[in-house]
Amino acid sequence: MSTQAKALLQEIRESVEIELAEFLHLQSDFLTQISPDLAPVSQSLSSFLLDSGKRLRPLFAYSGYVSTGAEVTAPDIKAFASLELLQACALIHDDLMDGSDTRRGKPSIHRHFESIHVQDELEGFAPAYGLAAAVLLGDLALVWSNQLLNTAGFKSEKLQSVLPIYDEMRSELMAGQFLDIHEQTQKTTDLDRSIKIARYKSGKYTIERPLHIGAVLSGKHTPQLLKQLSEFGLPLGEAFQYRDDLLGTFGDPALTGKPAGDDLREGKRTVLIALTDLACTESMRKESRKYFGAPDLDEKGVAILQEMIVSTGAKEKLESMIEKLTQEALLAAESELIDEKAYPLLLELAKIATKRST
Image 1 (cartoon, rainbow, N blue to C red):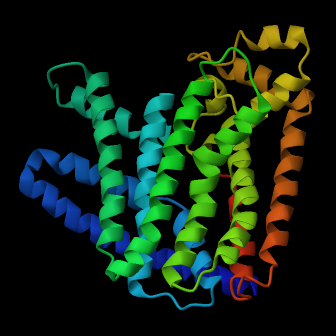
Image 2 (image 1 turned 90 degrees about the vertical axis):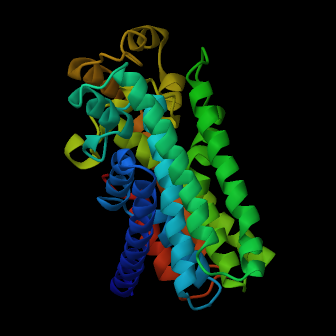
Image 3 (image 1 turned 180 degrees about the vertical axis):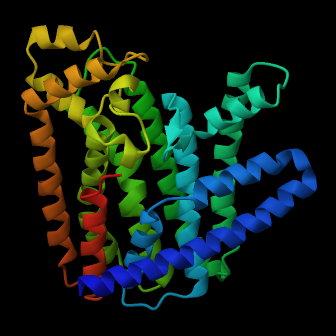
């Protein structure tokens, strides 16, 4: 069954890729008709979206659809694909706010346009050009996500049924992003605050809301089913973000596409850091302040903070939390409310979301 689920998910992934490529080709033509100076915009967004990506959100939307027992149609695939454009918006803006130099092993969008400014010897301040470009490209990806959904080919009634969830998902994402940057301004860490940020910044729009969107698009959902999908999606969404936190601190740059200890350099007050702070002695906290959040943090400083996280038991604690949340989600997926054809898909996606190394 696992092999069949993998094959089916790969088929949907490839269908999403096709829809994205066709949509981006049309939008590229539209932009270049306005001005040839917009070519770098379309090229950068197309590369950002098509060169890599696990397509988790479309796959969860598909699984939410299958959970109702319905058969997917071509317009549904387009709607699933629109979630990748929302993801692009979130990542581009997130990299800008965090000052990240790379994404998936390549320069982040703001750094890419900064380098274009330098290479072409343009007038003005290169970092400001990169910043402005990233804001606008992220906004454009957000607009395009809505456009792809609206032009998927749904009847008005079906489109209107899914828009409230789509809008709520985007509002939750932006709320989570603000809470994330606000957390960096606080003088203390707080585990409950960090958990809420993980839930809204990543967990809900990665898993719970795509599941809801898929189920609602099928036209066969019930309030009880949506609640059950939340019972699966919310704990798994948090587990997904906690794995991301561990990768941001301990991940292999060759796999993650980001420098080692990037979250430590950026001063990200993640659940991992909150757990570490709770178990730290005062002398350890004093030592960590020398390194945590330092833009010029070197390998030695990263290693010191990593050792602190491990020695306090925070890394092990977070791994246990991931396992517990994943098991909670899988138990919810066994519900009779969810069509049996969806279970192997949800099981496979849970593995992808929580066992990954990128």
